[in-house]
Length: 468
Image (cartoon, rainbow, N blue to C red):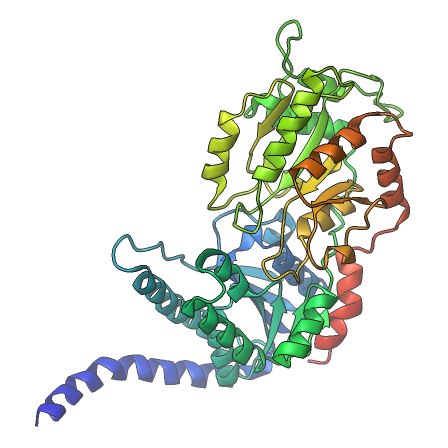
């Protein structure tokens, strides 16, 4: 009797959602004829900070597919994506972390909410031939997309950027039960996908050997808008940034011990060559998501050593160091930066609009990458973008970096702050001499004829989905 008294209210509670789900399934199946040239791209993260998935969407649209792009809308994507008639952005609502309760409970509530919310959004979208999913984050997105794919006849394509469990391991430790559960989840669910893409050959081999997942390597490639910035656009960019960030402002009076920022524009606008042999500060750029897999104390320590060398009379240019990006550790590192007392180095940490970031890279003299893969199997897309702008790079060493950065050819590889400081001293010792090593790296990049994203995508991914 007690059991029946509980069962009846439970049936009344769950019957409407179940009926609605069945109606949605019937509706989706009735519209399967529209799915052949339709794809859903899913990012369980900020679309504006997921360039590779934006590129997938743009390439699919260029090749005649209609695309729905699902993700968080925290920052603005590129204008060419926003204004593309074949691409519709559907915003997911991000659940803010609960302020009370055990951390495991907070995480569980977030996963349940994301599962229901993502499933609801996917069920209401047009039926798709493929669901492209970025991993990580894959919990709970892989399972949800697999379920929706089974219901609606969509094929799941997982684009492996890294392993989610390895990123969790940076916070909780590799043997934490939650990390081990996440690893099992990725392994099991990943095997159920129709197609797998990955970012390096090392990851492709690891997926095959340890997870029995066959994947196709699709290297990150720079989009066409990553290129060297013309001098007139450099000037406009510096003027725009100078309205917000003091490091880009010209000094109002006589020069002092700080940086003469106005010298950035002391160039011959006709020939495009630097007209000043001294005085112009060098522009160093790094970009980051401010997460645990990037140790920016390495760069800050190297900048201190560089600043001391210049104070000791070394013939080195002053530096403007721009670190772009958003992320959880930005406040922590901003505090460290504010405590530094550098005389010949200025550090600023702006968040740039999508259209300004390529212009900044194309205006810079050197890029620095501190991405140290949690799995050792992915490559930093920021370096790909820098190379697209023919910008030489100093990058911290990890397992498969050699697939991208060629030491002493297109940049330098370092292991600690002391090595980075030495490399900065070497590269800028003859700045901006065209015969210097920095200029030679740039010449090597110019002559390498870097393959662009559209060409690479059409060679590797299009043949895999063109038969739909």
